[in-house]
Length: 222
Image 1: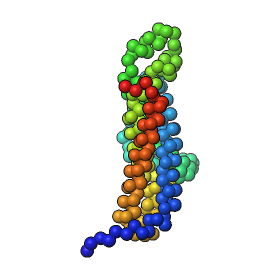
Image 2: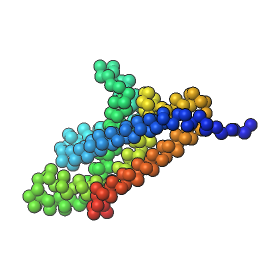
Image 3: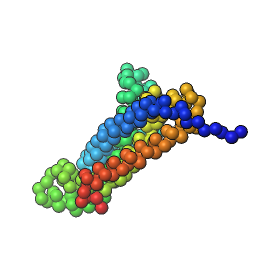
Image 4: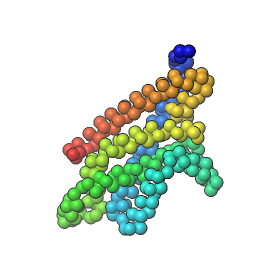
């Protein structure tokens, strides 16, 4: 029997879909800012710090990169209350996404720092700059310009991976899709629409970040 497509129920849930998309973008924006700060700070500490600091950061990076994001989310939301730490669904999602983004960002930024010629750092010290000043004014700007495309890709991965936060009842885009499907029983149609929405969000976000990058790193990108 031929399947009959029916999208007639979708328009009445447009407001719910819009709200879900807004929550997804909010999660992505906050976790990008926090995770990006963790990435830059962690990479800087790795570059300047001693062996103990580098080992500690390396353990954090390896722990996050080698465990599933969903398990990390469940650990924060369901595990921390066992220790007396109770946080809401949205806060748990932001915390987990930020920690996850930060671990990958550390490795990306570290690679950018390693790509900058060591001679530039030595020249900065010869001119009287301190280690922190050289890192802040010379090394990091070039490093971030070099790895910016990789950071943009990681932001998109974080946004698309945020779909699993619906498992702890965060009202994101996937949560909206699950709710609509449970009411209409039109699984194919609803998830097709959500797929298209995620695709459009990813394309729009990538173009926005690329435009921002051209403004931020004008003259610095290779």
